[in-house]
Image (cartoon, rainbow, N blue to C red; front, side, top):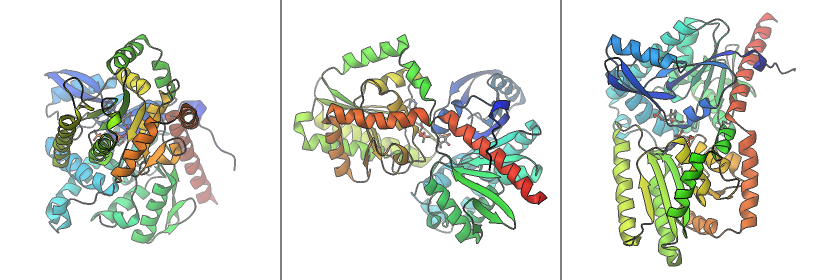
Length: 489
Ligand code: ADP
Ligand code: F6P
């Protein structure tokens, strides 16, 4: 049928995500400083401009007092953000516990934490209760700000319980839900004690979206095998109600990166970096310091490369920029020390008085520094063990029009499905393979680099965040009109 296009009318969009695009730091009783949040979800959603958008989420801090809450809400209002206040205990059980210690590792095929696997269901249950409670709090805030006709777009694994909460409050609300992580094989999802409740709740949405066709297929399988529902080419059907399920691969605001490269401050950073690393090839890693990013595997592969290629020692350097994330979760603390230990050992082994092979920074870079790094480096190394999409790989490609650097990309990142033809795809678990890909990338002739880059660049500039959101929202509107027509028939 004819595609309905709602784009012209500047539709009101309520984006609901655990993380707001800014995180708050307190400076006094009623004074707040707002800092940019880091992560793929924020990057993608900030690239979305054609809607009248309000963003509802957690500001990343505990604000127990009313004065503080009021002042923060006011500061956030200027950014069109609306805070959901979660107390410390809820954050501990919901965010650190259920979201980042249970769902995150499970959805990335790491499995469930040991203590929960061993029938100590008490902590699991209390974390799930807190998860539901937090989702209810989000629903209350959405409900308070909802106006008829709004599209409510829920995001990510933090809010799988939200579609149900929203529809219970108002069955007419247009509700979409999008997952920014992989959705795992139904055999993995089956392990989750709350597997039924979460699937059922997500199905309350009108449209459910994933980055790749595989994730969508896994979700449909989970619904058919675990809930016994019927899967159709459009989605999943439950007692006559259809939930549309489809793939909507995210992208970046590529123009923002391309334009930034012309700015004097970015050019200055580029000049400094080029001088600093003159005569050496530079490889780049940019990640949140997360267990899914395969950072230890990446560094060990680089070590193997140096070991096997003595002629490259002192001629190549790896810059690994790893911003700390979820630092209250013990697994993340362990990872930080593990990475520091490996980096120290390798620099001790291959460094000299004047140079080290690995520069590892535990910090985030501002946008201009990041663009400069993307532009001047010869190879980007993305070795995620699993990754919903991985936008760092898109950002690197966007900034490489003049240099035509090589992207080494994990086959377990969603991006492998879109940038696979231009990148060198690797299995990050195979350190030998990654090491030889590093050699291949560093020695790649210019014409091959150009061809590969061109392929990926074309994709990155034509599959933007803007397009992603417009397609999702348009599909959601169409889905609802079609459902109305069906019930009238
Ligand atoms: P994830 O969503 O798991 O963090 P993505 O690669 O999709 O992974 O997105 C990460 C986003 O966060 C990118 O936009 C990237 O620029 C940004 N980012 C990641 N690490 C850093 C860092 N160390 N400094 C600055 N920005 C970072
Ligand atoms: O894109 C994946 C993601 O998990 C987002 O959901 C999240 O906002 C981001 O990474 C960063 O993690 P956090 O919000 O826990 O800091």
